[in-house]
Length: 214
Image: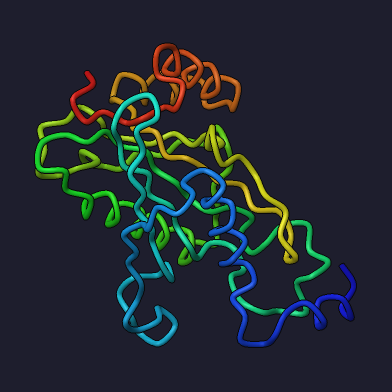
């Protein structure tokens, strides 16, 4: 897309990248209206949450689960300087599929994603498929869970999209145990994480995180 085409297609008030993310989700969820959580005060102006928004969809694929999607790692708004970029912003948005269980609380998962965003924005480091990270505590503090780390994989349904600002990969969080985390630390190569995630996907193709998994 040339700058002339960009100017003809979009206006300065358009949320160009944001709309591309929403369009990808609409292909899966149709007219489902997600629970959406935005920022009253932008992070750049002193707000607590670095992500511009989080949307939570309810999915019945495979088993009932929540599908959380971030808005904020990629370039969301009108930006003529980004139209020839290979990747939009950090080049990804995060997703998280987690099983409906117990109180069906979703806020712990949103806090988890916001904390990951703080890490990215403050360190300048980013995530790619088959990266992994310890969370230094159970991924949900008020739940008796053995999951104490996260691995990243391309979201099985969303994959990647091309936007006017470049490519966006939808990286899905997958909860992992201390035993699995230790195995990855012993051989921290992308191929080992890929192997683990392939094993976890057997019988769980969407890699839905179950807090009760041991």
